[in-house]
Length: 248
Image (tube, rainbow, N blue to C red; front, side, top):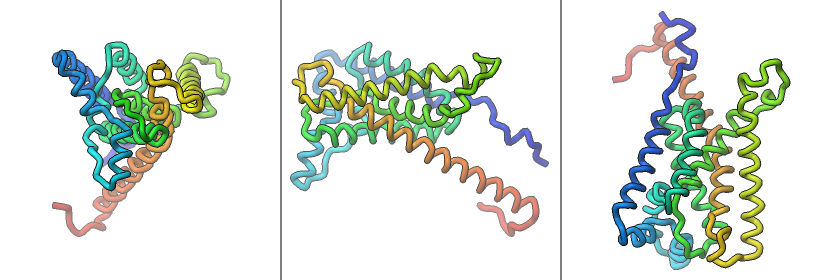
């Protein structure tokens, strides 16, 4: 016998989100231990759009390992802590909605989309790209889709309850996205020198990751819902005796 409350969502500890934060911190600790050998590591495993584009131009297979490794490398304490703070704030809610495995898929696929977006914007850039900003941008995009609804703007007596608490976070994320979009377009239009602070930020990766997350999150959620429906249908077959055998 199954009770109805068994189908209600249970509190979920975001262990995958904390695992990703731990991996990023561990990788940064390893970077600090390298000393002078750190720079060659960043050049080898940072994603360089120029290397990818030139390989395709010459009909060669590009080295793809930086697509995976570069997202766990960071260029300094400020870079690392800023990214981990955003992941800590946003990641738990998104993981609770998607589940741990699909949340990991969102994180990694979001990073991939972000890197390729920046490559499309500046295909022959020689600057190595490192950091989890693109993956976190995807998490932020998914967060907006999952929790930003018209119900957030309904005026209720409980102004600090429910979705109302998420309004400041939504406004921040929308402002963040618009800022990156406008500055990214400006940086690309004026072709600023590589020594410029704004030119050293992968604006295309941030915008691409955010938009990718807005698409990937709902797709993963729909897939999750379809899997749940198929399991419930399978249970009903067993209950009503329609299945002749059990999977081995």
